[in-house]
Amino acid sequence: MKIVYFTHSLQSCWNHGNAHFLRGVLRELAALGHEVVALEPEGNWSLANLLADHGTAGLMPFRDAYPSLRSRSYQTVPEALGYLDDADLVIVHEWNEPALVAAIGSARLHGGHFTLLFHDTHHRAVSDPDAIHAFDLECYDGVLAFGEALRQVYRDWGWGNRVWTWHEAADVRHFHPPFMERQRAGLVWIGNWGDGERTQELESYLFEPARAAELPLDIHGVRYPEEALATLERYGVAYRGWAPNARAPEIFARHLATVHVPRRYYTTILPGIPTIRVFEALACGIPLVSAPWEDSENLLRVGQDFLMAQDGKAMTAHLRAIAHDADLRSALVRNGLETIRARHTCAHRVRELLDIVGTLRPDQEMATPQLEGSVA
Image (cartoon, rainbow, N blue to C red; front, side, top):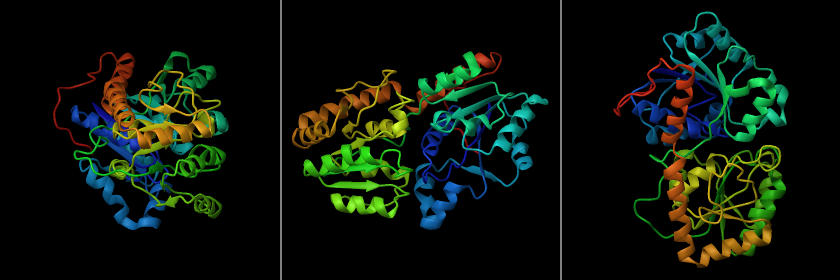
């Protein structure tokens, strides 16, 4: 198949989590022999910020980790539509302009023979529903939602059986434990400050417990305003700045444990969506402790794959236990890897995607024998 994916950016993961998952999925599709084209708008916000902060050197971790992946940039909607020729499957991510989303739908209506799917990996459907309703999806064949709770939102909007749950997952070709263990120390958290969606939670479940457990804490991320940096300094946290997602495995390999602090929307009105960083951390073989969230889809085994802390005191106790109990660390690493490799890799998600497309295009050849593929 020729598969075309319209993303905000493949090159840049600067405050752009979809790039993590997309890279792994595209590589798996290419490995199956499919022709894959990734398209991103020229000068997109994420890439512009990355280049402003780090220059072209900021692109090297992605290029080194994914040498076969390339994206094509476009300036205008008509230019973007030119890539639809001979496409069998087109996927459009929700971080695209409404004009582009509508134009692709119109192309599908007026003679396009491709299957057309909308991919939603954000909480905007509940936090800013008008932003999603601005998209003209009438001519789309279906929606890929990155959690069952989000799928239900689209079902309530009338999509019925044309919306599928398609969780994010770890690219285990890149996210895996280190080949040779070295000394580990302290805690690490990789995450962006964002828009105040979890400020109090970070203090209660990360900064204060790390200090109480007497464990040094490194933080990597972007969009930390002055008041956030002052908070980190007050707690004695070391702020390390932006970390390319491709470098996450080597960062995890230096630390004893990491912590997951969900954004508020994923603990309240969109429960059950852990986001990709949980999958990536477990795939890298680092013990994980999480602030509370409801694993309503039974994606992971709480207490075996990772530890859940219901309050700050429990988080402190878990962190102390991990720091002083090598057997506990080993069990968490072993169990987490087992679950990721059995259920939550990008290869699993590719098979799910091809099954979904197969229900829409039963005449379409979904997979080919394993072979080297190329990404345009």
